[in-house]
Image 1 (tube, rainbow over the protein chains, first blue to last red):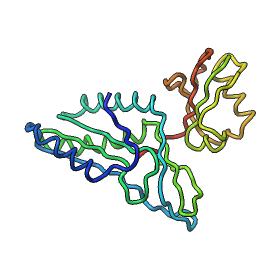
Image 2 (tube, rainbow over the protein chains, first blue to last red):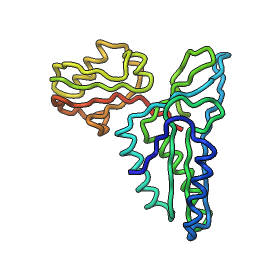
Image 3 (cartoon, chains in turn purple, green):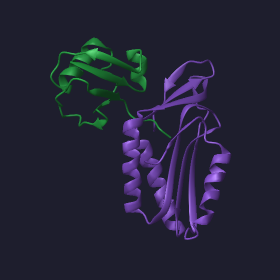
Length: 142
Length: 79
C-alpha cells in the first residue's frame, strides 16, 4: 500500500524531490500536479488561521487503494501519487498533493481532476478550521 | 456485548471524545443508532456507519458482534 498521509504540511522540497525522482522514467512525456493550499477563509468576521486534519486511516487507505486502481483502469497513466497532510496546517501551507504522469498531456489533465474529486468525495478525511481567536468550526466541502 | 465506537468530524465535539468502548445491549446497527440518537444530540448531523472498517449502506441493518469497531462518519472534508 502506498503511503498517502504525511504528518504536517507538504513542503516545496518534498514536491521538488518527487518531480526529480521521475527523471529516470523516460517514457513519461507529461506530468500534472494539483496542490491544495489552506485558505484563510473569513466567517462572521473571523479568519481561519489553520486546518487540523484527521482521518479514519484504515478506511481511508482502503478507499485510496480503490481510487488508485480505478485511475489506472480509467486513464493511460505511467504513475500517480497522492499525498494528504494530517495534523495542523497553517494558512498558505500545502495540504494536498496529487501528481500524475503519462506519455502525453491529455491523460494527465483528465486524470488529475478525476483523482482530486475522488479523494475529496470518497476518503474519510476531516478538517477542523481553527480561527485566529482559537475557536473552530468543521470544514464542509462545497 | 462490548464494542468500540469511533467518532469523526463534528461528532467528536458532540460526543466529547474520539473513541470509547461501550457495553451495549442491542442486536443490530439500527438499534444501536436509535439508542445513540435518543441519548445524544446527534440527530441533526448526517453520518454514515462503518463496521470493522467497512462502510455499510444507510438502509442496511447489520448484526453486531462482541468486539466490533463501529465508526460514525459525517460527510468527508479532505483536500
